[in-house]
Length: 353
Image (tube, rainbow, N blue to C red; front, side, top):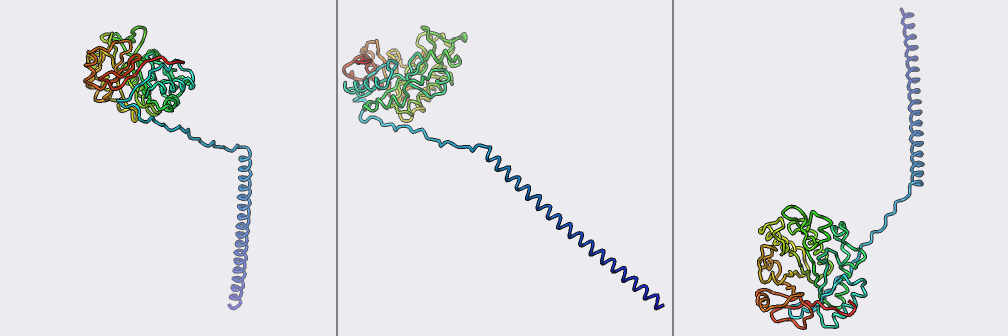
């Protein structure tokens, strides 16, 4: 019995020793695998990092650096408005044709002549009835229609030269008498009852009821206002006196379209004064269903009217009608401001023009 127990104990010790050796072997193998794995991972990530660095260096070497040019702000010269001119008691303007001028030197010479002759202001056309602009405009519609001549002086340049001679600058703008724009974009053109483009004396007009036509005129007004114009004088802002019955618009539509445009024109200008140029017929008949012009409505937008008497006689009836409004006279070679008028603009040829 004792001998049998000793044998069992001896056998158990051999089993325990074997298990211990196996456990130690397994632990050693596991440790070796851990060390090997750690080394392999370290080597893998190290090589990957080095490869990435080399790729970045190669990319940096082959990809040109982006150089951003500094943005230089376009500096506009400040607007220096004339002092002590433009008031009713001393407004005496010279009208001359910008279309005949080719250089800034010619404009400077005319401005000096006007000042030396005792004028306090000038009246110039920004847009003639032909539709051609007399300055380089940035208005998108003018550019798109090919009416913005980049070779001309800008509005800022023109007005600055005149201001240098302490001249009040009244800019005349034909709103809807515009053959060029109406021909280039018939969507803006005034239409007949039949739907055709209205043509009178080979000339087309813009439609006062057309939103696009109004926006074009208003954009030009804003541009002139922002560039120093002291006054913007609107002419041809209604329907044609002759042939109005041929147009698609009825009488009430004409009144509404002109009134709406006048309100928008008042809102368009912030610094410049606003005036409306009228004809003797419009002064004599202050509400016309043919043209859509109602002076009582216009007077809510501007108190100043300019009576165009070029080629016409200033009659006693016109003088009497002018007494009901604030009216400036636009005439030919007048020596003095007639009684009852708040100033005068003269069309006179000067040397060099």
